[in-house]
Length: 467
Length: 73
Image (tube, rainbow over the protein chains, first blue to last red):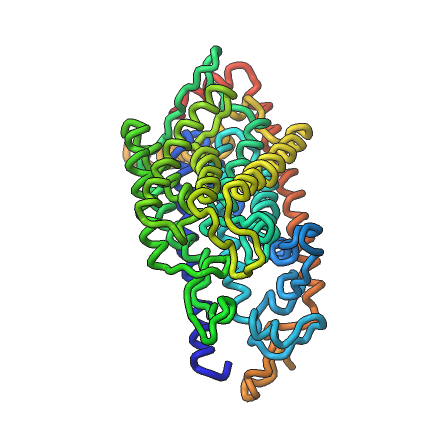
C-alpha cells in the first residue's frame, strides 16, 4: 500500500471486521450460558459441550467449503448464470492464509485479487463464520436434553457451513440472484440467519420429538423450568451485546459509492451488504428502538414472564432487521413490537397444535419473527431499489414473501427435516430413553461421584490418626 | 535454509504468501478435510459405545429409579 489514505481505509476495514468478530463471539457465549441455564442439572454438561463443539466443526468446514459457496453460488448456479470463479475463497488458495498482497504465486489469481483480498479475506471470512455459529447455535437451543451430540454436530455443519451460506449467496450479496430477480432485501438478516435457522430447527424437531414429560396425555404442554433463571437472563443479555457486533458486521464500513450512483465525484459512505447507503447511526437508532418495542410488547403479552420478555426483545430486533438500514426508529419500534406478538402467539399455537417441543422458543424468536420481518419489509420498503444496479428488481411484498418462504422452508425446514430423518432412520438422532431419563450427564456424574467418594474415603483414613 | 521468507530487507510490496512451504496448499487442504472426517468417525464410535454402556447400566432393575431420586431439578 503506497498511499496513506489507501492504507488507512484498508487497515481500518480490516480492524473494523476484527472487532465485529470479537463482539459476535459474545453471541455464542450468551447462547452457551443461556442453554446451560435453561437445561436441567442432569443435562448441563452435555448441553454445554454440544454447543461449544460446533465452534471448531463449523469453523473448519466453513474454511473448507462454506466461504467458497458464498462467492461461487450467487447466480444459483443456473438462475442468473453459472458457477462463479472465486479463487480467493478455495481452501487451497494462497489468499486463505498469511499474505502481504504482492504478486500471486498461484495460477488463476491476479494482482488485483491479492491487493483486494490479502488483508480483508480473513476478517471477512470470520465475520461470516460467526454468523454460521449463530445459525447453528439457534438450532442447538431448540433440541436440548435429548439429541445425540454427534447428530447435532452433523446438523450444525449442514446449517452453518452450507444452508445459511447458500442463502447468503442468493439473497445477502450484491449480485445474488434473489436480489436481482426478487428485489430481496434483508439488511440485518431477519431471513438469511434467523428465519432459516428457525425453519431448520423446526424440521429437526419434527423427527426428534418432545422431551419425556413435556406433554400430558391429552396434549397439554407442561413447562420444563430452567434450572437457573439467572444464567438464562445473563445469557440473553450477552446475546443482545453480541448483536451489536452482528449488526455492524452486516455493513461495509467505508466505501466510495459515488461512481455506482452515477456521480461525477466520490461519495464515501457506510453501506449494507448490497452496497446501498446507510449509516451506523441509523442502525443504532433502529436496533435500540426495535429492541425496546420487542421488550415492551413482550412484557405485556407474556404477562411479565422474564424468560419470554428477554426472548421477545430479541424477536423485536430480529423482526425489524430486514429493513433496519432504512426504517424510521419509531417504525422499527412498532415492527419490533409486532414481532414479539407473532413469536409468542405462534410458539404456543404450534406447541399445542403439533406438540412441538421447542425448548427455548428458538423457532419462534428466530424463525417466525424472522419470517415476519422479511415480509413486513416488503410492505414498508415497497418500491425501494434493492441495489445500486438500476436493472435489478425493486423491493416488493411478493418478492419478500417468496424470499421468506425460500429462507424458512426451502433452505431451512426441508434440509433440517430430511437430514434429521436420515439420522433418525440410522438410529443416531436421539439418545435412548434410559439415558434421557437418567440424564445426559449421567456418565460424568457417576464418575464424579466415584471420585468424590474415593477422596472422602482417603480423607477419613487420614483423619483416623486423630481419633 | 528457510521454508519461506528469506529477508525482510526487500521491496515489501513484492511479498505475497508468507507462510512456510508455499505450494503445499492443496495437500494441506486434503489433510484438513481428512482430519475433519476422521474426527467424526472417532467421535461417533466413542459416543455409540458410551451411550450403549449407559443404556445397559440404567436398564437394570432399580437403577433408573435410583438415578431419578438424585437432585435433578
